[in-house]
Amino acid sequence: MDPASFLAALYLVHLGAAAAPGPNTLLVTAMAASGQRGAALWAAAGTGAGALVWVAATLGGASALFVAFPHLANALRWAGGAYLIYLGGRALWSVWLSRGGAGAPAAFAPAGAAGAFRRGLLTNLGNPKSLAYYLSLLAASAAPEAPLWLRIAGGAGMVAISLIWYMFLAWTFSRAPVRRVYRQAQPAIAGGTGVLMAAFGGALILAP
Image (cartoon, rainbow, N blue to C red; front, side):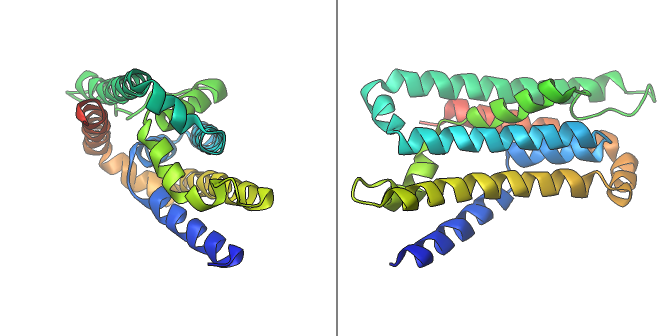
């Protein structure tokens, strides 16, 4: 496959993976729909930074480190799963506190720029299987015989796609029509988001 075709296929596959529902999508869309556009954009930036870390780790040969020290990968997986369960638990707790009309719950508490960025970054980095994902897609460009420009183009393109996609979600879900729908079903959405986040975390911890 010529480099142009390889990059086109790589970018298309990664866009599909980014668009698939997951913890990153839940975090950004829930924050945006609850009226936290600025925080959602910073969370999207955090997920983009996480993608950059994974790409750099892939091209830098971090997979060999996990092979040499498998307990390191397990520790990272457990920590990431625990963090997702924590986020899910906070969302469910907000629903519980708002019972009886005490106020509409938000899936994620309001956050400043630094806090939102940190949530996005940690949510992305919480899954060490992301390293295997990036490694599988970048295998050709990460090979020693691959030209340097192909490695850079492949990794940079994946980071850009992640950042642009989550920024798009943050902007779209923070628009007034979406927020009106969100407000009408806010308790159910906040509760569902919490359950899904906790489920993602549990699956990550229990994964073989």
